Amino acid sequence: MKKIYLLAFAIGAFTFSANAQIIEDDIESYSLGPLFEDHWSSWSGAPGPDNAVVTDEFAQSGSQSIFIGGDGVQDALLLLGNQTVGEYELTFSMYIPTDKTGYINFQGATENGGAGAGGAGVFNSGNITFNLDGLSPGVVEDIDADGTVYNTYSYPQNFWFEVKFLFDIDALTYTLSIDGVEGDPVAFGSDATVGGIDFFSIDANNEYYVDDVVFSSTAGVEDFAADSFKVYPNPVKDVLNISTKTAVDNVTIYDVLGKAVLTVNPDAISPKVDMSGLSSGAYLVQVTIGNATNTVKVLK
Image (cartoon, rainbow, N blue to C red; front, side):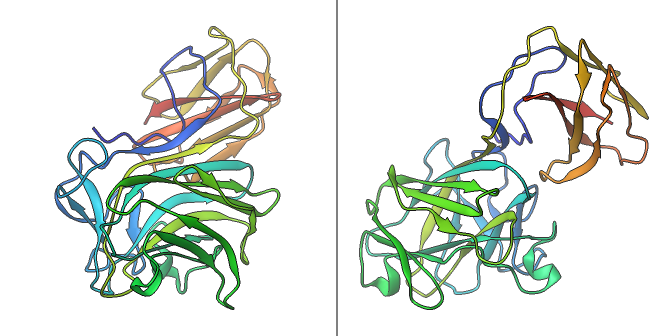
């Protein structure tokens, strides 16, 4: 079953793991066909032929994955919430049939409707190509627009393999790993933002599948004690009460796309947060006390 979290949570009091999950998606609960919902968008920013397609032809887990074919039109975006501070890890599984081609890139700021909805996208990586032009079976290259090859990797054709990005926004670098092999860090392009991943149909030979997407915050996360953090009421109508034993430094509320919609710095024990200006729906409330951060899901 598909799971969408801004951060891993349990209602009420809980402990929190070192990686805070923002997205966990195994593609299982979507209907077969074009995908334009949750954190999946497209370059045009609208439902249409450039969307990813949910298929049951191949899957790393369960029975479904997303498919990017060779029509030269598909241009799907995985939206990562326009993160502007901290460190993040993105992993997903990828399958490329023998001698077929694949292409991805890392995008800077995107709109919720997609990069194309707000004009041209911001390319924060080179062109990450798999079997470029059908002439390099099993070879991955991260190539800048000027032809500079940042890193070269290998991947197993006709088998699922892992793609991993480590984003360090403070250092403005990303580190790409393919099938467990890590490359050298590469500088962001022109934008200090982790906005999304572009899955593009680069040519007629293009054919690949993506499954088991996990996006997590990795920087500076420590555990709260099990009895140190409660919120109520839940569901909330207007004011959310946060019960703590020590002063809360920061409260950030995220929507289901990973976008921060409300931030306050109460510097108080057991603060109250006014959520009356937010629309009905599910939110993740991230509470920071010193160097410790924890999160809970709240319905409104």
